[in-house]
Length: 529
Image (cartoon, rainbow, N blue to C red; front, side, top):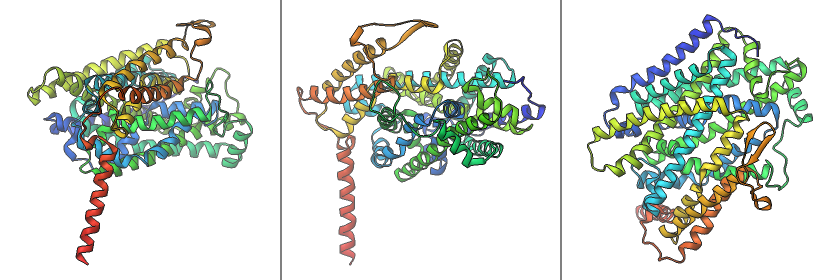
């Protein structure tokens, strides 16, 4: 990485974008007088803005820097997970959205309690909290390392500044500020991504066709390997993992489900979800392609040997873009992190309030709940800053690998609980509780027998059971945990009485309601004619 060469103009642009981020918090501060407006905006946000917010929620520094890094050093296999999202969700979003809007107040995990009891709710909400903190730490880590290399500013100070901004935005403006900030970031994201791709393609001798030819010849395109080996990162592993990821993110993740609740109607929430899905995959593909194009560019140009794969995109930005444009791209990178982290922080506060504080102190004044919510925002933000600082000392492997692995581990069978809850009227509380315990034991076994600790080449497994060690790829751990819950939960439920359920909690209830509505309309039309 060259010595930092940011100009005053670049710093002014970055500073202006940071102020705009704070402006959104101030702009909507006066509306945040109740927990309903603070977390759900009382239906004041249009569907298109919620769709852009879903895009920005799922796009962060991990996308901005992690995907180009993978595209540069490997092929497009890690994009497979994202490609599975529209395939799975376009078939399920129609009943997931109205189900949540009908049966929960704010917390996604309220559904788990209504379906399977308190233990299922606490287990799923704790798993969510662990995932969010691990993800936030990764975003902080990646952003801080990249900006330190590019600007020379001390890494820890970057984490502090960004962390304080996201705390301020959430404290002041709540979910409404977060969503409109996401809209602003969405446009910046597209503009910066298209700008980067355009510059790279014009810089490569031979243009787009040369990029495809050289990348293909060097194994930088495609989604392979395509064999069925579950011990390695293969197309098959990513397809399976992506299917469960799609259901988990759009069906059980508070950051996404909370967006459904901000829409005015079910129809608006579904439109927003489809828009978010439609925009997210192209953005993931765009930034993966940036890495592929950079590989071809640096086949034609000398690249310093000291530049690692995760530093190639920042190196290109600093050496090939003019003054002002560099500042704009860095500002977009910072804003992407702020948007993603703000969404995480708001959802953490919602879960902290609904699943923990309200359960221990019910029927308290809403003003107290609002104060507690803001206190949770501050505490969660400071905790995420500390985790990010820890990652700076401990993190040294590919960031996408870190994120996907932690997500798989902390998924903890949540999708399995959700699938049993929504599709099986026979599954009951006792059976699912047994399945959760089995899932915890399985996850602990798989993680301990497949994770090495130590320094350099001197690493040992946390638990070595020899031939009984878990040897499949870590991403399959998340998949297996869901399957364990589905299988054990259903079989164990057969030993206990069939539960009496509210039909609104089941897919069959939504289907019957839909059919009844269609029949009523058909009958009405017959009468009219």
